[in-house]
Amino acid sequence: MMAKEIEVQITGKKIVFQLADDIAPEEFTRVIEYVETKINKIKSRMTELDPQKLALLTSINIAQDLFFLKKENEKLAQILNRIDTLLAPEKEDGKLTVSLSS
Image (cartoon, rainbow, N blue to C red; front, side, top):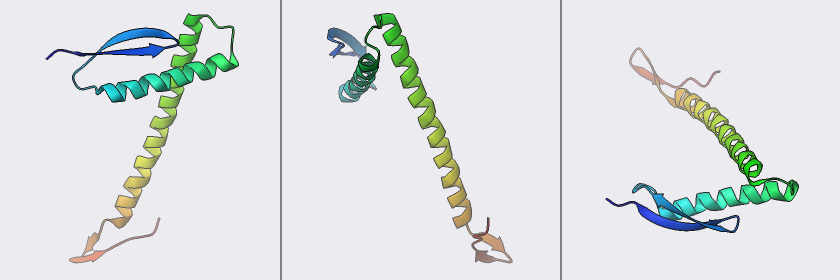
């Protein structure tokens, strides 16, 4: 299969990307919008950045978001596991009981 081609605009520059078959153009466009928002947020606070530093700071900022979300996801997974454990019936002498103690 041929890769899909999509043209986007980032910081006023048109760029053409070749998308893998499993990436939806709409999803990729949302990612570009997210990156553009991050770039603009940094540019508004630090107006005198060269493009390389701007790209690096944007990458670091996005990586921080990723690490934060991974940590939150891990916490939620632990909570769900705890809930599953609390709701799972325990077998004692053929009887089903639920333990709610911590």
